[in-house]
Amino acid sequence: MKDNLIERDGKLWFVEYHSDYTGHVYAVRRVLYRGESCCQSIGVYDLYHYGKTLVLDGKIQSTACDEWVYHEVLVHPMMVTHPEPKRVLVIGGGEGATAREILRHKTVEEVHMVDIDSLVLKVCKKYLPEFSRGAFKDPRLSVIIGDGRKFLENAKQGFYDVAVIDATDPIEGGPALLLYTKEFYELVWRCLSEDGVMVTQAVSPSYEFEDQITCTVSIFRTVGSVFPIARYYRAYIPSFDGEWGFVLGSKTHDPLDLSAEVVDERLRRRGVDGLKYYHSRLHRSLFTMPKNIKELLESFPKARVLRDNEPAFVY
Image 1: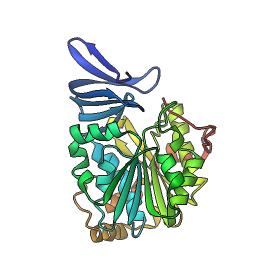
Image 2: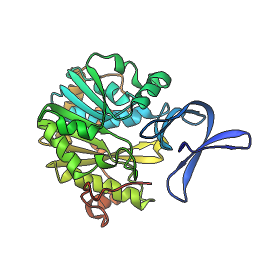
Image 3: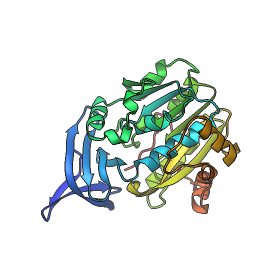
């Protein structure tokens, strides 16, 4: 089972590998759950450093310490970019935290959350209820157990206003590998309304690892090959070992057109309050890149438009 737990010196340690040569080691206070589903290994560990942590296939997905940073940054820039999001699709997001942030917006009438792994949902509801904070009980949320891509193939054309792709990293042989290709984003386009907006997590822009740079820039270029507006942004997520990338794709609305005043007005009108990270004056700065990442996005030679028969993956 790929849960990377090691006993040494009378302590239990969780090792997250970033390459064949590097990784991080965390002392484990308690193992709350260890198991394996049809798709992946699942662990919920109470780490001394980050608190309760969800781990899938040996990779940290969410921690009590900073999951709110990731989920606020994933959701709210996209939600405010659309002027009136009512119907929302989530692919992945098993903790329920993505749905939690979406449901803050009072414009939302229904959320369809599609996750391939029913055991992940069951485990998160039992051991990590503070991550979803009641989202699973909200009548606007419908949870569908199934393959997100197959769901899109049968989804009603133009039905959703916004779509959030909160899938696991594209790991070779993993369940999310084909959720980052042009063919997949074309399915997302098809299910979105005429002014629809989407966002996807896009792994780390860390220049230390070539596979991560290739993957994150390729996701950006692939979204841009389908959507006329594609914007890359990033935020610092401590438990993800640094900065993390996101790509927003839009049919008509550009997040860079929004002033802080417009962002404030939309958040206020929708009743969104109590955020811990995202705010109106942060909005535009999320899309401002340091020079090295700007240059990578513009000209990294190994990046390409990803296809089903030629995906990219990380370690």
